[in-house]
Image 1 (cartoon, rainbow, N blue to C red):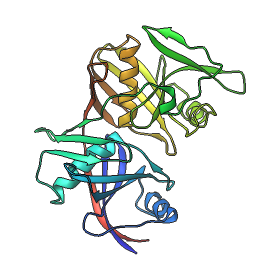
Image 2: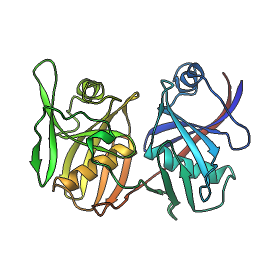
Image 3: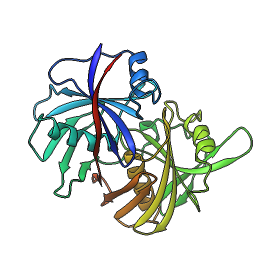
Length: 284
């Protein structure tokens, strides 16, 4: 099979974009892994497949696959790249686009400065939504919000805030995100038996009430340069815990994201860059 693709990134989180709006594209796990391979394929954190949506009032549907071939629910940086991809390839001329993912309908808006704002919908805090098993654990309550102890078999434990942004997140606060053991500890958190479908592990350093530094060990992908849903989860957790204000700049290794949340059942808004790197064709 010969595929035409576009390579994009959002704050360093990179994607292979595929247009399946005119004809369906069915890829095996092996083919997806080949596309994501940085030596033998195109190379990306994730592959994003754009399709028409059967739902009234929704412009498109897209599916997201990790470079391991596994399908995942949601990706904020991918959502921003999707908007630019759709506009650059003539799939739409609208500045505002509604798109269906595995478990949500998102509203995305192209800004005049080229950045893209994504309505990420409201966070979900019920443990069953991740799912997270809290049985036998006693959380520490900070500002009315739970910090859950997460023990490891070697006697160590960390405190995490757990929530869903359409995908599961466990966020911890660290003093220095640069020195945090993201790869080692992130892998342990990702595969912790308390999370039946695994989890994205966030490491957040609070710089001020309007600024954080963040690294995320993503489920199925390892540490990435940026994670949009991880940035949203970190800011929401920080607001619930009383550490952050309603608008926060998130500094990732790949660039800056701006997250806004008014609390309660309100949607989280994420604004950030989306860039085209190159286009090409590959035989897979």
